[in-house]
Length: 610
Image 1 (spheres, rainbow, N blue to C red):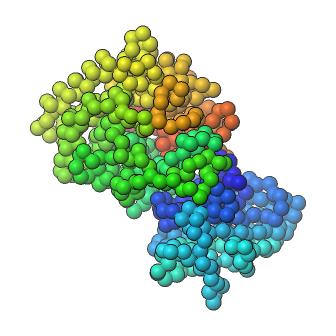
Image 2 (image 1 turned 135 degrees about the horizontal axis):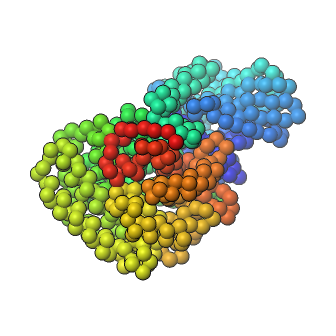
Image 3 (image 1 turned 30 degrees about the horizontal axis):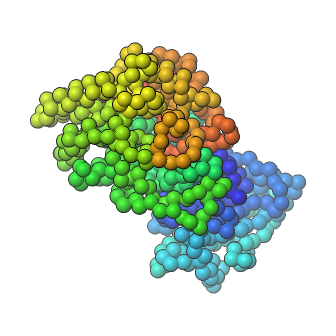
């Protein structure tokens, strides 16, 4: 039985990640990359599907925390025998990926147990394990090889690798797991303590840039720091792509079927990701993300997808892993994502917005990149009136979603501003006319005067949290009565238990059965909208309510189930942490991501503290 979602912590090497439970069990690890098949998949099944336990024998109390400003996890176990410290981390990758676990005795003498179950192909393939002359264990199945080197003896038992040892005060034991292709040489041994020092130094130096450059010094510094570290950990370093989450199929409602693979990169996250990174001073990461975006979109404009693989892969074929029962019985377990083939008009606006803000932030595009943008705008000019599947990727058919049209306006608006800034006047008048046409279309067809609110789709009476983005992207100013009416309607009808729902599933057939939790980014969007409207105290109260949902090491999942009091959905979720960072910056006196988007101000151009 896996732990509660909020009982996991993240470790990673900026190319993949693992989830470690409070009980000292690593229950999810995909090697060698985020998108690879898991070799530990107990998170979505049982221990027999792959896990790595390192904990005291019998019951023990545990507390944990990250080393300050790092992704090095420290878990303290205490029982009647004494106490030990477990240190888990993944060194920043060289040629081979490693996962290191060090146990140190604090007091007394504590009996420890180690149990390693490797199962490649999402828990399906049992490897062939051999012990080499130097004591190294090698596990091979097909193209995959994992080796274990430990400072204490281990043995095979019932298709597992196990070991018992006792640690006294001042004593330590270390375990290193490494991955390599089965047809290649063994990954070389590393020095665990030395790698611990290097890994701690890497993360400490990286996060120090946030406060060293005085980019953020508000009261939420700790939350912003942890969210930025998490965002960095979810970045695939070789390409700059940022995955939605390191997991697949963690349910939006326990026992439900809304289980999706989030180990891909969404264009929809482009602008908020870019602003979060640039406002915090991380221009190298912002540039890498911008460059990934341009490479992913390159090609025929009618083939632009809403998401891509970490290297820009386009074929994200969705299939079900029939041998995994799912997290707490939540099935099916899915790999791949069929939504990648949907038409979602909003991504054109996100790409245009991100590239404009990259330019404003000092990351100029090349001529070839400008030509690509123009091709995307030309294609959007032909299709913006078509129905689409919308921001929530509905599987029940296309509609005239209001948010999609708003983002089509964003695309043409940013095209105008980009052309004005860069002196590209060839299509300027055309983009201006299209901008006006789309704006008028949305105001006439997307607003319901009886509800005094914009609606989910043209002619609909349904509300949608994505409408909170109308003032955030600058479609209408926050003081506009239609914006204020929309925010009030969402607060009245979509806010339950103190958090915003995406929409009411009972009113919209989205093609998937069952309920869901509260999509956390939506509530962060409300924080930003309230700030823009001058309701700062109300915004702060909601923001701090959202912060209280973080687990003990500061991580958020995709959603929250207020009835069960649990985090749900894929974990940790990049968009939740991006929204947290941007909402925190909204409380700065001048630097506001929403104002930057709506007014096209350079990221990081101003600063202030509140």
